[in-house]
Length: 78
Ligand code: HEM
Image 1: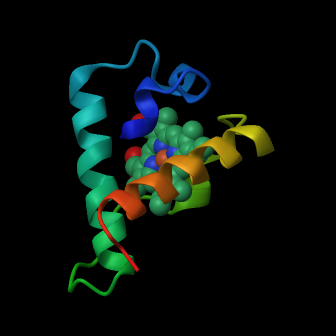
Image 2: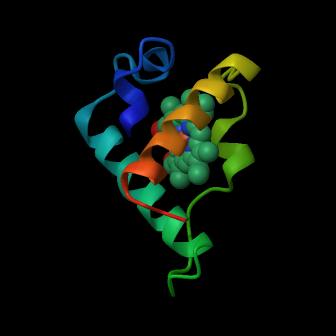
C-alpha cells in the first residue's frame, strides 16, 4: 500500500473509500501469503481480472517495482 502516496501511482487510489482500501490491503496480504506458500488459499478474483482496464502502463510498473524492491530491502528479504 506504499504506492498509494506515490506521486505517479497515487491516481489509482484517488477518491476510494476507506473500507475499499482496507479490503484491498487485506487481499494483498492474503495473495502474497498464498503465493509464498503460507498455507493460505486465495479466494478472491485473479490478478488479471482485478487489474484489467486500470490503464497501468510500463512506467507505472517500473515505479511499482522500485517500491517493491525498496520494501524487500528494508525488510531484509533475500
Ligand atoms: C502498478 C501496479 C499496480 C497498481 C497501480 C495496482 C492497483 C490496484 C488497485 C487500484 C486495486 C483496487 C481494485 C478494486 O478495488 O477494484 C488493486 C487491487 C489488488 N491488487 Fe493491485 N495494483 C498493482 C499491482 C499489483 C501487484 C503486483 C499485486 C500482487 C503482488 C497486486 C495485488 C492486488 C490485489 C490482491 C488486489 C485485490 C483484488 C480484488 O479486489 O479482487 N497489485 N490494485
